[in-house]
Structures are given as C-alpha cells and as structure tokens.
Length: 172
Image (cartoon, rainbow, N blue to C red; front, side, top):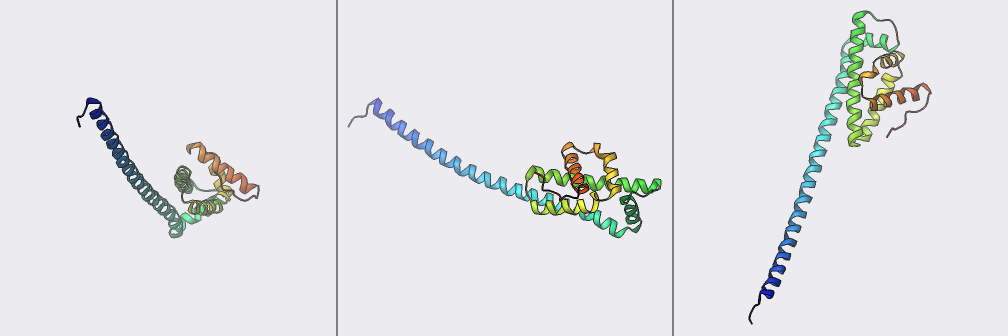
C-alpha cells in the first residue's frame, strides 16, 4: 500500500493528538501534586503562626503572674484608679502590646478562617480579662486610632455587647 500525503497527514494528526493527551495527563498530575504541596505548606504556616501567637499571649500572662508590681499596676489601671506617671507608662505599654497581639491574631483568623476553636477561646478570654475592665475600655477609647479599622470595629462591637450584658457573638 502506498501512502499519500493525506494519509501521512492523518497519521501525524493522530500522533499529535495522542501527544497532546499525554501532555494534558502529565500536567494534571503535576497540578494535583503542586496543590497538595501548597496545602501542606499553608497548613504548616498556619500552625507556626498559631504557635507564635499563643507564645505571645503566654508571655503576657506570665509577665503579670511573675511581676507583682506590674500586676498591681494592671489591677489599678483596669479599675480606672489613678496611676503615677511611671505606672501610666507601664499600663499603656502593656495594653498596647496586648491589643497589638490580639489584633495580629484576629487578622490571622479573619484571613485564614482556620483555628476557630482556638480563636473563640482566646477572644472570650480577652473579653473577660480586658474588655470588661472600665480602665481598659477608657484606654481603648483614647488609643483605638492606632489600630486597623476592622479590628477597631470588632473591639467596639465586643465592648458594646459586654456593656449591654449580651453574650459575645462569633463575628464573621
């Protein structure tokens, strides 16, 4: 049998189609593999971020547990009692650090939407320990401008819920 140019072209098209199919299968496998690696890396990063945030929160708790002078300043400041200039500086720095740490954790949670159980436990703890204190609310009202708008809305809504004796809601 003699092959014409048309016959050779048809064979070439068939071979080309087969090569395209093989390439698509290969790319599909590679995309699936890459997606799995990206997901694993994102999970690892999220875990590391949660550990870092938890370590920061633990530092704040341990600081007040180990430093009686600071604990006394915080008790006075939380109650809205008068503080000396030095006490005011320590109180301001402590609250700025606590709110900054809470803001970072809040934004991580909002962006990734993972770790809800940990976030809601921490948010409840923060509200119970900080946002119920009159001196902290006063401090917040004076300093909230240094925080990002989304976080300010969250804190303001939490304070409003506490002041209305309503339960803190899980804000989405």
